[in-house]
Image (cartoon, rainbow, N blue to C red):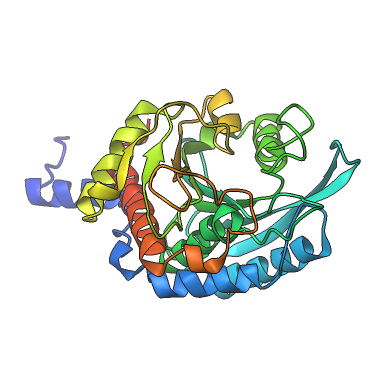
Amino acid sequence: MAAKLIPAFLAATLLAGCAPKPPAEIPWQSFDGNRAYAQAQKLVSFGARPSGSDALARQASYVTTQLQDFGLEAEEQSFLASTPRGPVQFRNVIAKTRGGRGGSGQVILIGAHYDTKWFTNQTFVGANDGASGAAVLLEMARVASTQPNLWFVFFDGEECTREYGPEDGLHGSRFFVELLKSSGKTSWVRAMILLDMIGDARLNVTLPVNGDPKLIEQAFEAARDAGHRDFFGFGKGEVLDDHVPFLRAGIPAVDLIDFEYGSAPGLNDYWHTDKDTLDKISPRSLQIAGQTALRLISRLQMLPVR
């Protein structure tokens, strides 16, 4: 019996129906710097938020509720770890878009730390170093809430107590990556984008050299797409930040960070001081960082999964 021929137009239609559809482009222009700034104000209102503090716990509850209100599946990931000041209870907050539960090469993870450094001699509210990245992450989650396979992770314990080491600093990101490894899910994450200190009114985002070269290239292209290329450049060296545990696990990662945060261009004299307050950051800077990061996600979503 002769096989029936399927008309070419029908065959193309059937093949198109079987092929996975790429997600709709994220409306990155909808990122609102004023909304992000309002989130930063709210986070700073909790006061100093070092790991293990009541203020950090209250902040975690607020962030979780916000993410759930945006329609994401959000939960706190609590764990106990040793530090130079004794055992500390840490709290990562993890939110996943409902459009997808992951799979090999599917997930794009966007992270920021939301703890502030522990001090005994000053009140450190971390408007830029702690609140800015978390505020941008919240606004990104609102804008991209209907996208598939996005994970937004708020890391606790990025700040060290004394000096970075196996039991000091990067606690949340190290714990998160170890769980990925133990559950065999490191291959799920195709890219990790980190946001840190991106609220400076004199914004100058410098991408550290210890980042995935292809992701760095895509980040510059995303900044160009969004009209913000002038605010992004190459860093002068490596930066130890929450992207490092991902790189060590073989996951491509990039750190969007402005490490010149001070009273004049090129200085960093506001960093880790009581001068890191809301008047030093701006809605415009938050918008530049957020729009660029969202555009970067869109560019990555258009690339084939390997």
